[in-house]
Amino acid sequence: MRNIELFNLSVAEILGECYESFPKRISIKESDIAYKVLEYYDDSVSDDVIVFVEQLFDISSSTIEWLEQAGYIWVGGRDHKDFYRVTLSSKGLELLNLIPDSLNTKDTLGSSFIKSAKTASKETVLSSIKVFLSEGAKLALS
Image (cartoon, one colour):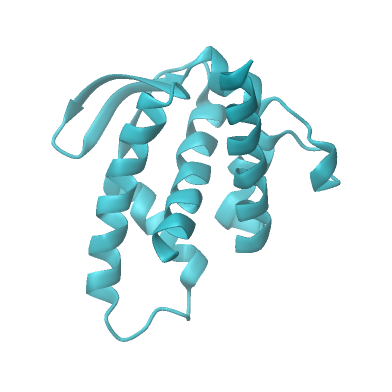
């Protein structure tokens, strides 16, 4: 289950960066995403931080690939673990502009992802990601 949590936090960080920069295409490094996700675990990481960070690197890269294949982002190119000319797809932008009733907030999903590790709790970010992915699944079925 930990991989799912790390995936969800990676999704929030990646989409937050894309939303904040939209429509500009940006570069995303797997290491940047991994270290941002690590911030959610300030003191709770066990003694084996190196293994945890390596896991985060793998999940970050795989998450970017998954977001592209799922149609949430467009990636213009890639060099090893760096992704270039990344931007939100129309589907990703539409979903990030939602203001879901279930989250009891006036912020869009995109705005909540921009805040992410800076101010939001891990639980808040995870709840937002669940809503985002659920709405994305509904869009795919319609």
